[in-house]
Image 1 (cartoon, one colour):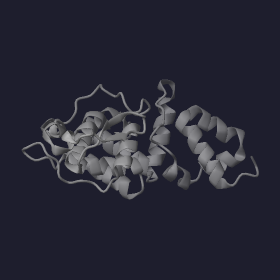
Image 2: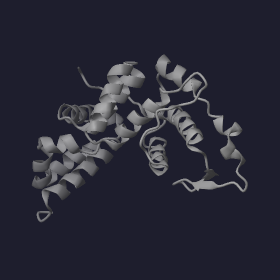
Image 3: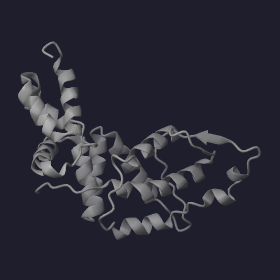
Length: 229
């Protein structure tokens, strides 16, 4: 372990903290190299944070770790705080601003959520979305797999903001039914990262369906964020 560079120790310690906050403390006690890395502001600014487990018997430690990361400007911590404000506190503007900021600071998930929110809120009276983000279809597939994974999803116990629900309900997910792309013969298919196949869609139908799927799933990833203002 003494021969490992600080960058590798940082990566290991960040992974440990994500899996179990108690082991994070134990690692710092057991090895001086981990303890030195764990004291640096850079560690808290760049620690992997999205998959941090909220262990019931470690609430105080998790709270302290989150607070240090957030105050250090960690993009993932800013993103999770923004999600908490947007979906749970119903502070839509404030939450979205933090999500956007986290994306500007390099959080890939925040960039995706910011772009898809812009897409969803561009829905018109016919149920069609317009502000297509600069994402490839493969990237949208990859990020949707992440937000629908069991590690992030499944948070049901709160009321979603009315503005978001009203917008989501207007998006027409049945656009492909009457579109020319659904009548291609023979049909063309796309294969998702999870191995499933679906019929190829034109851009209009693809983004409408992507916006609908995003709105149905993204609110399930918001969770409590015990940080004092």
